[in-house]
Amino acid sequence: MSDSKDLTPAAGDAAAPATQQALRPGEWPRADVAHHLRRTDTDPRAQKRAARQVAMMFLLSVLMVVLFIVAFVAIPRDAVITLPYIGAIGALTAAMGVTFGLAIFLIGAGAVHWAKKLMSDVEVVQERHPMKTDAEDTAVAADIYQVGKESSGFAKYPVIRRTMLLAMALVPIPFIVSLRDLWVTPPGITTPSEELLVTLWKPGMRLVTDITYQPVRADDIPVGGLVNVVPADLPLDEEETGNLDARAKSAAIIVRMTPEEIQSQQGEGWDYQGILAFSKICTHVGCPISLYQQRTHELLCPCHQSTFNLADSANVVFGPAARRMPQLPITVDDEGYLVAVSDFQEPVGPSFWELKESYS
Ligand code: FES
Image (spheres, rainbow, N blue to C red):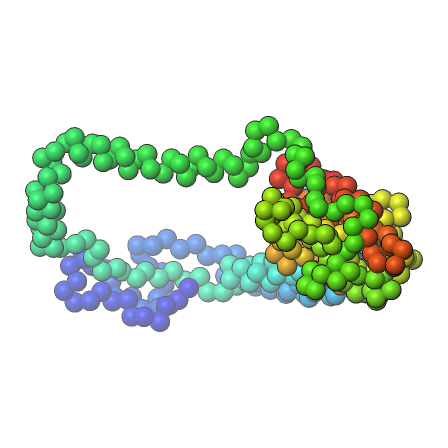
């Protein structure tokens, strides 16, 4: 690369080599630096070939953008492909990722190829000013260090010096040891404990909204609607429940779709005329979810974008969650209000005990 600076060493610059010549950009060859001409510097045909290669990479990038758009329009959102070592992933997500990634990569590769083969590669040398601290400043720093050493007694009390160094050396160990829990399942935990399997839902318990605590009538839920619900007999003070976690774990959502839109459920007849109830607690790390897209029936967690298809047993279609959202079996009572048929049949919330497994 050429440089527009005048590279002549400054007059009186002690660091400049005695033999340094005044250099100007573009002056070549220099006697002290070996330069190897590239094939494209001497062969016009190689030059044209390199230009074609660069243009081809840019054109392939254009093709990838076109394929991205085609994939976005043509691939169904629920199509899944299975890859070795990765498992099942959304076909649309994979196609969009590959095509857009290649589009960006090819622009970068074309630019690099262009620079290496066709742009000017004349070497230049820019001398640096001396980096070493001068003797006077070094002496001042040494004096300051000596004064500090004497006044602190650092040298005088070796027992303090050694124990302090030992203490400082060991302080990072707790942080390093605690990193172990990032990838190791706590000992003895292989299945969910009994407590994780139980929430406050009981057979016949009404579903009430989480704001007004009014029971929800099945006829009041429109197709495409979503309502946040909790168990009707939710004890409101901590002494009664003895377990605030159980209240938090019981939060649920209900959505309504037409019965024909339901592809599968976690249990036979767990819906009521297209009304489905699911846990509200994300199975990834436990964020509450209520972002629902009626057209695709997908429930999206705002924390890390795990996406669940509520029309297909709430299976994971995207994101880091390892298992589906548990479904609550529901029906209606004599007055037409939605009630639970039983508790959840799968543990709700994050699944730390099954880091290497997946339900769905
Ligand atoms: S908590 Fe839902 S995706 Fe992470």
